[in-house]
Amino acid sequence: MGVSREIATAVSENARLPRLLAVLLLATVPALTAQLGQPAPSQDDVLRQAETDLKNGHIEDARQSLTQALGKDPSWIVAHILLGRISLQSDELDKAAAEFTTALLLGDDDAKNAQYGMGLVLLQKSAYKDAVALLTAAVEAQPKDLPRLYALISAELEIDPGRARLRLKQFDSVSPDRPEISYKLGLLLLQHQMPREAEGELRRVARFVGQRPADLTSVVNLSTLFLNLAKIRFSQRDYWQALQDLARVPSSSISAQVKQEVLLLTGQSLIAVGRLTQGLEKLKEATQTSDSNGIALVDLAWAELLANNLNGARDSVRRLQAKASQTPEAGEITALVERESLPPRAKIPWSQDWHLNGEGLVCCPCRTPCPCLQRSTFAAALRGYRRLPDRARTLRQSSV
Image (tube, rainbow, N blue to C red; front, side, top):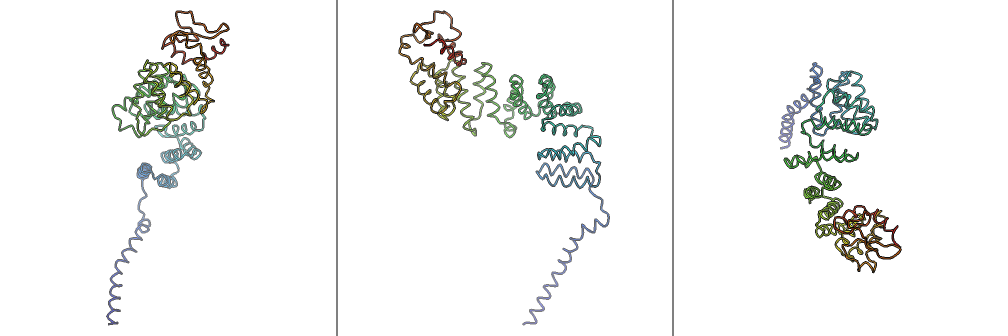
């Protein structure tokens, strides 16, 4: 029995020998093929693999393959440019600048990609004048490239807004196949106090949203888009359009702050078009979301006054003083509510303008609303609300 077991073990071990030999032979294949002089991957193969790695998020693999290729051919311009792009995406500005500079010294490519990349580096380093020079050359090489135009406009806005405005015409003449870039440009123009130009870009994006909403949700924040459009229209006193834009703000997946902004602007717009009751409800809802927003409480107090609800206005002022007393308009609206609370006020018709002076309570004799204390009509009251500091200043100067 013992001999039989030994024989069986030996046979089993011998049976594994061919498999072991096969594994060893396979392991030596790469070394053997290298010794036999197998050709190295071509530059096109390396470039194709690097781009695939970048697309799949394998940044270090792409960097390694390109670096190895440059070890064999340091004059390969495309590899230097691609390495510069990788470093730029990783926010390694100095490394990116080194690669783009090398590519420029080697002559750049026909599309001026090295100049474009170096221009982006200088833009991020706030070297706007030098960035404009390089980005201008890049745009001249590819005048319909929207990312390049966006970068050039970004740099020109910092040093020559007039030139940037002219460049916008070139941007708008290009087929709008990249709404995410128009979105970024619209927000950038808002930061530079150019609401009219910003609205043009954002409206373009809004049209795309209406046509292909699923294509843009990953690259465009719809809440930011329509809230900013509503703010622009509100500032131009186009309250009906502001309400339409606010209605397109998604109600789901928005922060509490954005929700309060939407409610506040909706309330203000409703009041501006004469829908006082609906506007008042929106302002109340906005302050319920958070009563630490002083502007919302100021708006609510004024709306309560317009609705002839003095108790509600007093309550809003109390909350304002308790939660947000540092709000710039807090003193003005408090003074206005106090004035409306004076005992003689009840003797004056609500539609009659009035003020205090050294002789006591006096009605305004003018047939048209006064420029400082307008209260004869709803519209006049609304205009006075938009100039609340001026109203309160006049009140303090004329009151006793």
